[in-house]
Length: 283
Image 1 (tube, rainbow, N blue to C red):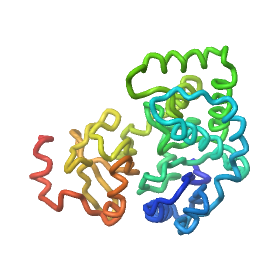
Image 2: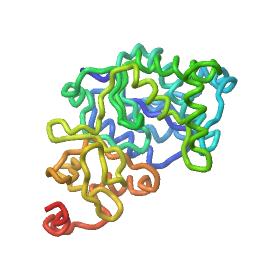
Image 3: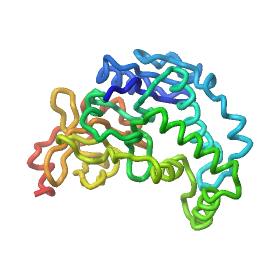
Image 4: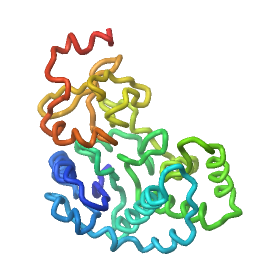
């Protein structure tokens, strides 16, 4: 199953973009790697193809007119996350793509994603169980279904979907949470077949969060607040109860972004201590 492109979208300048995009292209030399960005990050694209995100925001005014904020996060944060999916969808349809890999710009990619996809069950979406699309395979038809769902949810205030998100938001009163792009993806996955990328296949998996031990059904050894990674020929391996697991990606979310440059040099924060010392807790 070929991936027509690996698509990143980012607004503003983040120096780590340069390394993230270079790593994606290094692992996928025959696949198009795309940055949908702005003038602040154009020079960071490196080997990736650069396109202006603003050229694909055809639906921005429509979304702004109907969007109802129902999250403890800021309006701008959630609105921008949802709007980004619309722009990615428009870009993919304009390019004539059939299937893409969507990646947040804090995701380091260490595998040829078309080769990985060949071993996955064929489904319109391959993402994470909580609806996170930070590293996910999409058919363009599935992206368009997500776009249609977004507008159905927010434009029809009498719909079952709008009633659902309102109830979820009310249940979160006084707590962190609410409606995000992740929740909308969860809603879509009720009607569209999908596959959980945290599943271990052929001894390898996708990283949900570099700073979390749990990764689907696997629990990884942590060291220094991050997954204890060892490197073989420049490829990362985590260590779970059932043994060594190859990581297709590392998701450097939140504060882990500060470690991207170090990880690209294959250096763990805890130094090169003997494995027998590091992995005693797994025995």
